Structures are given as structure tokens and as C-alpha cells.
Length: 338
Length: 293
Image (cartoon, rainbow over all chains, first blue to last red; front, side):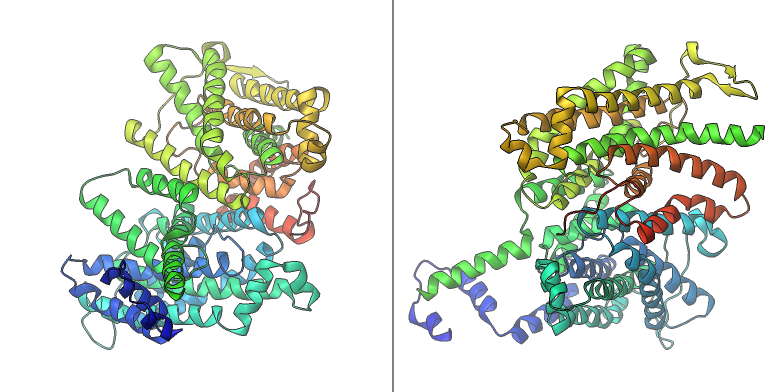
């Protein structure tokens, strides 16, 4: 494989192209080191990514990867992941306010709470597949939304939770710049966990269930239990994202639980590429950046733009960014190997 | 007792909206295997359209009741040809996502023009006041909505069982391949059926205009409840969807009164019913088990 690269210089290939091929062909740890390095230096780049926006990207990356874990690797489209993102955000916010927990512990508590409510929801939802699964998760998420809305004594109702403290061993994290680096390890851990799940024997079974549930059942795998486990793990990851989100904004409102948030997570995954895992990170970067830019330029109809992008992506660009890039990279390296 | 009857009547009226929307969803699903996320947005367009027709063109309610379903049905058919059709051969989830994107676009388009404030729409003069139903008085307009919605449901049922189109739709719903094998051009009916389902949503929207707050987001949360309704009834079953629509309307109306001390419970009753149905009859009360994937 490595000799093929040297054997043909490829006169038509520019440096950018051969650089991309080299990345695509590098050992996996080099690629992940590059990804990690990218996350670390993101704030130093000259095009000025605001730290607050960068933190949002981290949260949405976790959220999207959690949705892709189900959609891309288990074949289940959850349209209700805002339930886990939002529940974690509220729980993390409440324990930070009431108990003064340091922020990583608050985020962890939130994510655990998300996993706990995912057990009954997942148990009922995995009884259905396909489009019904999407509708059932959507409905249960709406139920959580109504509960949060009516339970104003705890959630603050329409006002949401305000002035959520973020604290870590007496360090001052009020500056978003420092908070980005404080949040980064949690994000990387979460992304690593998702990667580890997908590339484990358990993950292989999930893909087997996605591709042929009847065969997986015939082989003796308890399909429902596998799906439920994947659902709860996914909810936990979504919860990590939601917990970081409330810490980043020091505020959470009912929007975090609304179905538009669930839908946006699926949009991010489709944009990045279903079943690519890292596509979610790219999609999150793109969509969060775009929304920030739109609201900065005073454009109010953000849904119009996201909706239009989404319609186009679904009709014309179903592989997503990461999926298309991977296909192009594969074609290039195959062409060189001849 | 009078109170109970009154709540029951209220529940049936709300159920009529669920039933009309669920009916449209079920008809579209039967023919296209598409769950139309934008159904709530078309309901909203029906109500907003009635308002625009009245204020900008002076078109009264009765004409809006005809014009809006026709217009929206045409828009639905155009969208089917332009987008939905292209994804027909793929996993139905793609069309669910597509219609989700369309929902965001439609809502924001209306929002940018009319804001998010609720707009009042006067009850048509002929239907003002209330009627004496023996034990209690009931607003005339609500009685009209109930009667009208039931008539539409019965009419659609009659069309499905007694007309040639209905036979094709039912056959294509149950065994699409076999229907084609008999030489019936199923594809010809796909676009009109999609338009018809959308027209029903628009009709429900016009009916809602005089009695509900008209605003760009009026269909946004409603559609989620309607999804729960069709999961309860069984989306494959047109009768089940309509029956579940009225049933959930009743359950909610009684819940609001008898569970007044537990607002969290009464707000979420429909989802609790859905959870119970998923426990005992995962395919829905009137649904059949899906073919194994």
C-alpha cells in the first residue's frame, strides 16, 4: 500500500490533493492526532473563531455524534434527542446552582440523568423501527418538554435557569477562552468513547442489527437489548453535550428540549454524513458557525436558511461532507494505485 | 352530569382536528409510505391563508373553506413532484427529513411576513352565538366544526370504499407490487393522493382559524400530538387514525377536568396513552404488525 504512493508521482495531482491523499492513507492514530490538534489550535487560527462559538461547536459535535451512533450505526433515527440534551442541561444547571458542584461533575450528573430517562423511553421506542421509531422518540421528547414547562418550580418554566455558575477548583473560568480548553477534554473523551463503541465487538453487532435484524436475531443476539443499550449510551453522550452547553451559556431555556433542537441534531448529522461519526463534528462546526454568522449579520429567519440547506442536502447531497470527502479520497488513492 | 357532557363535547371538537390531520397523514402514508412532517405547517397555512384572504381580498370564511384546500392541495402536488418524488425509492426516513426541512422553511416564511403574534379571526356571522343542545348551550361554531369534520371523515371513507380511486388506493396501500402486477397504474395516483392529504390539513386549518389562535407556530406542537395519535391508532389503518383522533380528544378533555390537580399529568396524557399502547399493542390499536424489516 505504501509503495503504490511512491511508484507513481502523479503529474496531474497538485500538492493539496496529494496532501489529502496522504492524510486519508495515514495510520489511524495520525489522523486522530491531527483532529485533536485541530481542536486545540482552533482558537488561534487567524479567521477568528469566537471562543463562545467554539464551545457551542464542541457541544453540538458531541450531540451530533450521539445521534449518528444510533442513526448511522444502529439504523435507528431518533427525532427526540433534545430530551437527553435538554434534561442533562437542566440537571447539570440545577446541581451547579443548588450544590455548587464543579462543572465537570455537574456535566457528568446531567449526562447520567439523561441516560436514566433514556431507559424507559428507549425500552418503549425500540419496540418499533424505522419511521415509527422517529415518531415515538419525537413524542416522548415532547412529553419531557411539557413536563419541564409545567414544572416551573424546578425548571423556571418559561424563564429557564439563569446564572448557572461554572467553577472548577477555584479557577476563574468566566473567560470563554479558558472555558473552551476546560471543556475540550470532556468533549474529546466523549468523542473517543463514541469511536470506541463503534469499533468494539458491541459496535459490530449494532451494525449487523442495522443491516439485517432478522439474521442478528437468528444468530442469537437479543436485538432489543442491544438497541436499548445503544440508545442509553447515545443519550449519555447527548447529555455530555447538553451539560457542556448549559455551562457554556450559563443559561438554559425550554428551547433546549423542543423538537426543533432534536431536528437540528439530525440536520447536523445528515450534513456531515450519516454513519461517518466524525461527519457530525464537521457538520456541527459548519452549522453553528453559519447560524452565528447569520444572527451576527442581523438575519432573523435562521430556520429558512437551515431548512433550505437541509432540503438541498437531503435531495442532492445525501452522503454529506465527510461521506463525500471520504469517497473522493478513496477514488484518488485508488486511481494512484493503478 | 351536564358538566361531563360539556367536556365530552369539547373533547370531540378538539378530537375532530386530530382526526382530520391524522386522516390526511394516514392517506398519504398508505399510498406513499411517507410520514409528512410538514402536515402541521400546512394546517397553519390553511388558517393563515383564511386570514389573508379575509383581510387582503375580503374573501369570507365560506369561500376560504373551498379556496385554501384547493390552493394547498396544488402546492402539495407541486412539492410532491419537485422533491418527495425524487426520494420515493429511498428509505422513507429521507422524506421525513425532507418534510422537516420544508416545515422550517414554511414556518419562517410566514413568520417573516406576519410576525409571531396571534391574529384574531372573527367567527362567520351565520355561526355566531350558541345552540341549545337540550342539557346545555354550546357555541354554534363548534357544533358546526364537529358536524363538518365527521361529514368529511365519512365522505373520505365512502370514497375509499365505493369509488374506483378509493379501491386503487386501498389496494396500493395493502399490496403495492400486486396492484401494479394487475396492470393498475399506481404511480398516477401518488401525486393526487399527496395533494389530497395536504388539502385535508389545509381544511382543518381554515376550520381552526375562528376558534384557535392563528399564528405561524400553531401547527408546530400540534403535529407532534398528531404523530402520537397515529402511533396509537396505527398509521397503516385509516379508520384507526380517525378513531384515535377523536379518542385522544376525549381523553385530553376529561384529563384537563378530572386531573386538574396534576397539571403535569393532564398535559402529557396523550403520551402516556401512547406508552401504554406501545407496551400492549406495539403496532397500534387498529394497526397490523409491519412486515419484518
